[in-house]
Amino acid sequence: MLYMLVISVFSHCSAGKGTDTLDPDTAVPGAGPSIRSVTPSTASAGERVTIAGLDFGSRRDAVTVAFADREAEIVSVSDVRVEVVVPRPGETLPTTVRITVDGRSTDAFPFAYDYPAPVIESLSALEGAAGTGMDITGTGFGSQVEDVVVTFDGQSAVVVSVSDRLIKVVVPGDVGKRTVEVAVKVKAKLSNKIAFNYTGLQYQNPVSTWSLPDPTLIKAPDGWFYLYATEDTRNMPIMRSKNLVDWTFFATAFTDATRPTFEANGGLWAPDINHIDGRYVMYYSMSVWGGEWTCGIGVAVADSPAGPFTDRGKLFRSNEIDVQNSIDPHLIEDNGKKYLFWGSFRGIYMIEMSDDGLSVKQGAEKQQVAGTAFEGVYMHKRDGYYYLFASIGSCCNGLNSTYRLVVGRSTQLAGPYLDRGGQLMMSNGYTVLVDRNTAFVGNGHCSQIVPDDDGNDWILYHGVRTDNPAGRVLLLDRVGWDAAGWPVIGDGTPTIKALAPVFR
Image 1: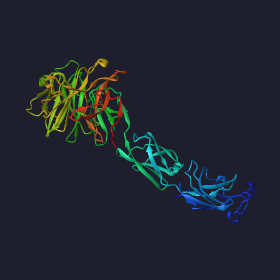
Image 2: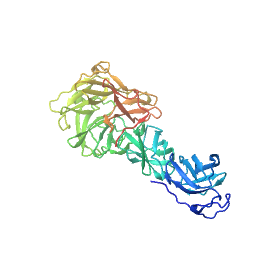
Image 3: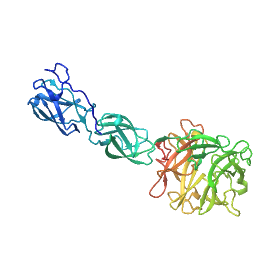
Image 4: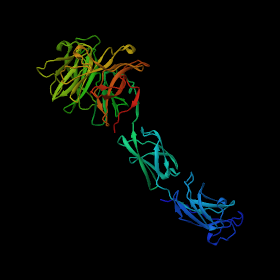
């Protein structure tokens, strides 16, 4: 589309004096320079136009030609004709042209400036997050914000300002994929395209300042992640998030009237959430401090992850199954069968469960799979290996906590489990996955691994803030996998700030 401005043309009567209106076709020779026509009347920067008129003289050094506020290069001059090269526009779009001869100027003559297609030369960043500012450098952008559209794979960005060589924009969100193409359209003319990578928003640990020890979570059909934790909030908190980063309190799994009761005055610890046969099945520990032979594991069910949960009672107590400190349950399904893992510093054990997950399978025998250094087990199957995540050290001594997240693996669910160096976990061998740093100590007891929409794996666990050691806060980290198939988390300590998971 062309920019056209119709203006009145005036001619000076003599030596720049007088303002009577004069038709260019009746201009009188000797009355001063005047323009009769510009051919072509529409042109782009760099193109040549011929200006016909009167009294231009023949001395090139006496003549200047201006398109709005930009002086043009003169190719040739005669008394009735000047040939020029249309200049690049400045901040003011050229819509008129004037000729000055020895200080005497013509009146403004209409000229329609035709923009060439815009060209992107560079982006100030080839990757960034939605909502951040970005500069686009190039040519042919004009000067009017309303004439410019910047798109990221079709999603329009907010244009902050425009000049012919620079556009400032805000990177849009909700594009739907990581790598996009940035393009500029000025009126109907489209630029070339340059690739841009979304890095997503950043998050900072902790992702919740609530005390949420021993987290477990599940993604529901409504798109929300539901997280449950040891009841530092009485009756077991339920938190919700759409992105693993922004967590809000939703409800409690139980009430004073519905909470389990098989351990008198016991606390509800270390839950494990699952979806079985259309129901949400939660395993929980119930114990008092020091009650290692009376504590046990129970199960509750709900039709929704939001609860309310109905207690189905205990599965077993320590003194019934002959495993001291029977807490920290975790269910894994393998080859159509369900197995419960549990244990805390008295050995890690597994046992087969019923098909509905609500009881131990009749006749099943427990089997020990790891030694006495561990608690808080979580099982994960990947590429032919079973990974046993667990925690070692003290969980609950504030700044003196020595908790660390560790891992081993096996090609069989029942083991033997080995650390990276080949040591048996049954003999308390382990590979440290997350240790302490200056910001967080006592880091461990992880949740399930959750993949995001870009295929990255994420894990939640608790830790103690060194700047505010009250409670155990919720930490989030991305799990990488090295060439040998071992999980890796950053530098081996909790991340302080990093790129967030991607959920669309």
